[in-house]
Amino acid sequence: MEHYSCRAQQRPAPFASYQLPGNRSHGMQTHIRFGRLPYLCRLSSIQQKRRWIFGMPYRFECLDHVSGTDRAVFESQGFLIIERLLDVQIVDDLRERFPKLFAGKFDTGVYPDEWYWREGMSLPDVTRHMANAWKADLAVARLALSRDIGRIAALLSGWSGARLGQDTIWWKAPKTKPIAHHQDTSFMDFLDPQSTVTCWITLDDTHRDAGTLEYIPGSHKWPLTPLPENFHGQDDYRAQMAAAAKAAGIQPPAPVYIEVPAGSCVFHCGEVWHGSAANITNDRMRRAIGLHFVSADAKFSDRKGGYIYRRYQHTDDAALDESFFPIVWSKDREQTPWIENYCRSGVRSIMK
Ligand SMILES: O=C(O)CCC(=O)C(=O)O
Image (cartoon, rainbow, N blue to C red; front, side, top):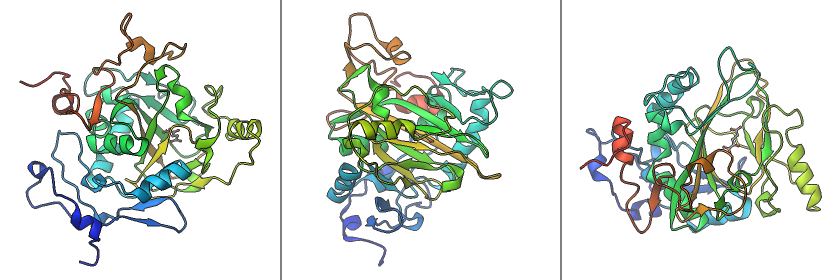
């Protein structure tokens, strides 16, 4: 019982209809640890409460409560770590999808929006990367369209709702190159507000020498820079961040390396500088999924930009179509109605 915090006991127990036989739920406790990783909200595996049923978007009851402290950490550092969000079955299921995705074996028969690495065609030492795999793979869809994750993204950024802007698959095999430091919001030049929050979820225990994600704490307060020129494989992978710091007259603080167990996640705001070094190990995989949320109220901007995603804009219409940018959580309404049916069947239709 000592594992139950007051706060956890005060939480309601919703989603009872999703409870599995044999009750999978555990006690839970959330606290901020000021140790090796100072920006951490820890949810240990025996302390979490999760209920999910096969084929539905995943539910994470442990995310029911975002405290003022969590929000303060996010606002001051630009990111918030939550350990062990996914349980082992979900981690295993998602890991199995990676080779299938990059071999072009898609549940739905639909290609992802971006697919940068192919066996036999691409350089073996480049990080394998794909975007909007939710359109191709239903396990990725169950994660990317989870209302609980979108809800935290919205609450941390002060939005009344969150849409999925994009998911990104990152497969950094042993001996693969870095991902250059960047600000995610630079990629959202086609939206108003130009703003995004990412939930980066690791499917492997992460280590500094295996090229884990790293953040420059507080760098979300620096000016926003345009789209980065280099992204994959740049040797000096922090060069763009260093140039931005210099231009702003700032001495960048030391990076924070995210060394956490598989299934953990980090929420980061779109302005914080982040990237990852080469995986210099011979044997460690580093697989991760990024979920990039935008405000439910976002519209297409009048600015130029959006070389991929503006193709989803209707003529003379600034609205984001929920078929392509689904609302995963809103305080005012239900999530986009086709989500549950799509996660079960791969068909984007509203069940009557
Ligand atoms: O996983 C990585 O190395 C990069 C992740 C990233 O930049 C993101 O998800 O925004």
